[in-house]
Amino acid sequence: DENVLDTWFSSQLWTFATQGWPQKPELLEGHHPTTALVTARDIIALWVARMVMSSLYFLDEVPFKDVVIYPTILAKDGSRMSKSKGNGVDPMDLIGMYGADAMRFNLLTLCTNNQDVKFDANIDKKTKKLIDSPRTDQAKSFVTKIWNASRFLLMNMEGYTPGEPVVETPADAWMFSRLAKAVKMVTEGIENYTFGDMARGVQQFFWNEVCDWYVEVTKARLKGEGRLQAQRNLIFVLDTSIRLMHPLMPFVTEEIWDNMPASVLDLDAEGNVDRAEALMIAKWPEPADYAKYVDEDAERAFELCRTVVSAARATRSRYRLSPKAELDVVVRAGAEDVEKLESLRSTIEPLANTASLVMGTDVEKPAASIAVVDSGVEVFVVLEGKVDLSAEKARLEKEIAAVQKELAGCEKTLANEGFVAKAAPAVVQKKRDRAAELKEILAALTAQVADFS
Image (cartoon, rainbow, N blue to C red; front, side, top):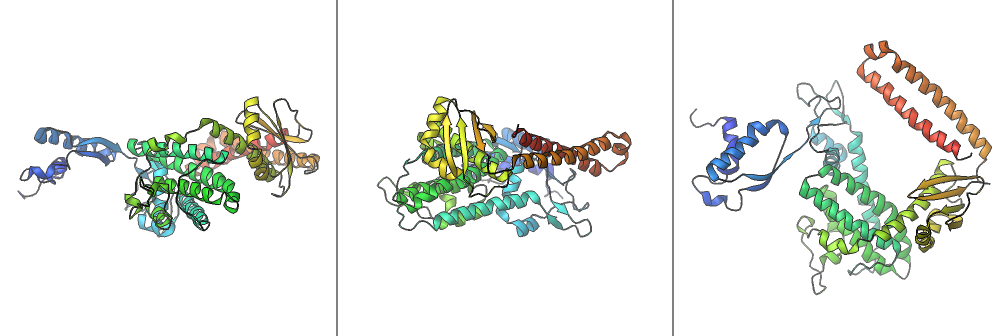
C-alpha cells in the first residue's frame, strides 16, 4: 500500500512528523527538540540512531538532548517475560494486590543504571496467575509507613499555625541538615536519571531518619511549651519529604498533601498562605533554598547519639531483655565526641532508657559488659544482674555447634562434583544460599560469645 510507511522508516520521522512537519513547521516551536527519550537498549540502532539522523537531515538539529536507557525487567529465573511462556506479570495484578504506588516504587528501586533486573514475582505454573512479589510487598510496607507517620503528625496539629522552621534542639539541627541533603540527592537523581539510587535513598531517609528518629524524638515536645514550634518543624520536614517523594509515588503523597495544613513552603513574601491547588503543581524544594541548613557538626553529634541509643536497644533485643529494663551504659570516645554526646545527654538517657550514663575519654570497660564499636566510639552496656552470663554463653556455644554441623554438611554436599553436575540448578543455588546464611549466623553467634570474654 503506497500510503503505509514501513515501521522502521516511520519511526525515524516520529519526533517531527507528528508535530506538524512539513506542512506546518511553526507547530514545532516549543516541542522540538525535546529533553529526553526514554527507551530500552535493543532499539538504539533501529529507532534512536535513525531519529537523530533524520532530524539532523531535515531540521538540522538533534531531536532530544538525552537518551535514557532503562533496564529490561526479566522474569524471576532471568528469562525474558513472554506471553507464550506464561512468565509475564500483569501490572494490574500487582496494582490490585499491592497498589500502584508500591508497584511503581519497587520498579524504581530495582533500577541499577542499564543493567537488566530480575523481577521476583512468583507465578502459578498452572494458572499463570500472580502468587506474590516479596519486594513489591516491601514497597507496600514503605507506602504504609509514610501514610501512618503522616497520619500521626496530622492528628497532633491542634492549635497549629504556619510559620518558619527554627532550630531549637540538636535533633532539629540534625534533621534539617539531613533534609537539605535529601533535597539535593533527589533533585540531582531526577536531573541525572539515577532513579534507583534516588528511590533507595529516599526510603532510607524518610523511614530510618524522619520516622524512626526525628518524629520519635520530637513527640515529647508536642506535649510541652514548645508545641507550636515543634509542629512547624515537623510539618516543614513532612511537607518537604512529601514533595520529594511525589514523583516516586504520586497517589499516596497527593492524598496526604491534600489533607495537610499549609507549611512555610506555602507562604508568600508577605507571610500569606498561597497554596497550590494540587501537589503535582506545587513548588519543588530547591537545593539552594535548603543549603543554609547543612550542619556537619550537628549531624556528627546526633549520629553519636544514635550510636549509643542503638547499642542499648540492640543489647536488649539480643539478650531478650524487657524494653523497660534500665541499663548502665559507659561510652569511651575522643574529647570532641564526648563533648557532643554530653550536649545530647538529655536526649540519650530517655531514648536508651539508662540507669546511668558515664562518658569520657579514658573510662575503663566495666566487668560483665558487652562492647559495641561504631562511628569511632566504644559503647559498653553492662549486663551484670540482667543476664546469667555463664548460662547465656553455654546456650550460644550450643547454637554455634549446631550451626557448624549444618554448615559442614552443606559444604560437603557442594564439594561433591556429582551433586553440582546432576542436581537442578535451583537446588544447587538453594544449598549455596543456605551455606551463606549459615556463615552469617555463625559470625553473629561468635561475636556474641566474644562479648563475654
